[in-house]
Image (cartoon, rainbow, N blue to C red; front, side, top):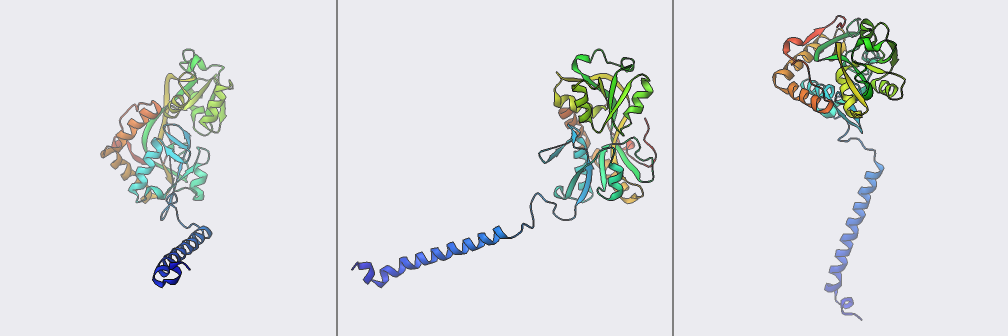
Length: 297
């Protein structure tokens, strides 16, 4: 008979160690089973605490873009700054895709509390609207195929040419004022206008020159280019429901602070880097107001 069998001291110790190891293993398996079967109640990627739904566009490189769940661009930077001043952490900011066609509807329905974007043509014109800003005074411009840049350099060159505009942006009115013979064709977004341009359904895309510059950089200068012609205005601001007086005042104070502490200058530098867009004039606190009337050029 083996010696360890007859020696109680010798065999009890290894058996106790094995027993403890088995007990720990079973406990671990039980815990893993509980975790696997229990619903997940929290995540670092989900809002922690009260959330604020913020409307932004998601297909404008350098200005307001969503890619693989990450958001970037000037409008996004301003939104994060302002909501931070309002007391929300980044995990509490929920970005909601909007377009110029549905901003009003989403504000009225409560889908969003605020929107950061180029202002729709009718912003502030009705009872449901008011906006704070602008935090960017962009202009209107033209994006054309690279080979047509020299041929399409002003309003006279648009006669009998198809110009794609984003529905609701007001670009159709701006182009029509300057080129009565231009053929206006509307699409739901700048991306769709870009597609129309590339496949030959349009000869130019008219609209916000900051957005168009970002698209040119994203697509490559060898394919599309910016015309040298600039006209009209395309202000970017913070859109809120009419009557939200306290919110509007707080947003205005946040934008003023953004200018004073140098944050806006850094955002403008990022816009230049990411969209090849140079801001024409430096933003000052005198530019920032609460507007209730219509946006005009």
